[in-house]
Image (cartoon, rainbow, N blue to C red; front, side, top):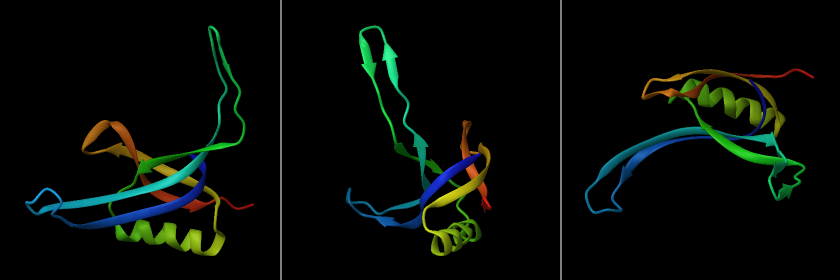
Length: 103
């Protein structure tokens, strides 16, 4: 799946906001998709440009490092994402790999 990559994030720690210490972890990417017009009934909303979206990725330092290398070298750029079913929720996909789209 080709997308315009904005950023990647990965982290883990222990949150104590609710009093009791609770471990957390996350890993995701942000990307751009083309805006879509909304036309239905009495509604006619025209849009142009891009809308930011996000998707989770495999919690893997090697995968995060690939995203970091791509963004450090290319900034905002087009990448090709490899998706796989999320083992925690099989109705969703997560990013399993990434490669830079060569121009």
